[in-house]
Length: 207
Ligand code: JB2
Image (cartoon, rainbow, N blue to C red):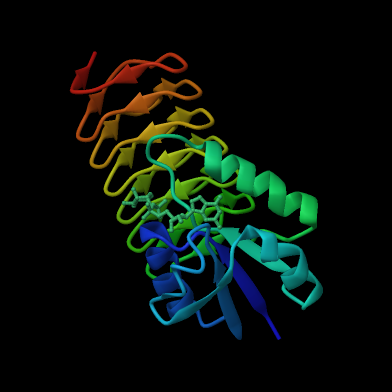
């Protein structure tokens, strides 16, 4: 019997649940959320408690857990939840929507989410806990760092390298071969035609 815990029951979790229903690979799915007991149910998935319930759930046969808190302003919560889950000994699967198109030559690390209509092309490498959100395109030979988020409809052309904890905002485009440094934020709708340094915030036409 395959069982999965979703950690965090907000908006991002709804996308993940929708994907899991389509996948039909788990017999039992439950949520833990910081807002329990106020939050008891998300899209008909039961909220079983808050993070304090995780050790007991592990003993009860939940071997896999997935961080379903998203990241827009900061990756700090996702990072600390990841470390906590590892410490408890959970396995973190990569979850890929059946409507996504992921090359068999791409590599996805643990905890990655690839949403509906996203494309991850050949020889792309997606780091731990990264989010490739709805309709995003990660072209051939791209490298996406740990905890990075390629938001809805963003495009990384071939051979782009994105560091850890980076946000590529919704609808942004990064042209081929460009590097985006760790912790940088590329604003929604931007067009990036030059490298972006670590922790730099850029938006608009970035040249
Ligand atoms: O430490 C925590 C914790 N901190 C916040 N442990 C657990 N188990 N849960 C935690 N949460 C819960 O995450 C909150 O109680 C809340 O239910 C949820 C965050 O929900 P929210 O809808 O605010 O954000 P999100 O992270 O699910 O989604 C954001 O990121 C996505 C990528 C939104 O900005 C979305 O629009 C975006 N698509």
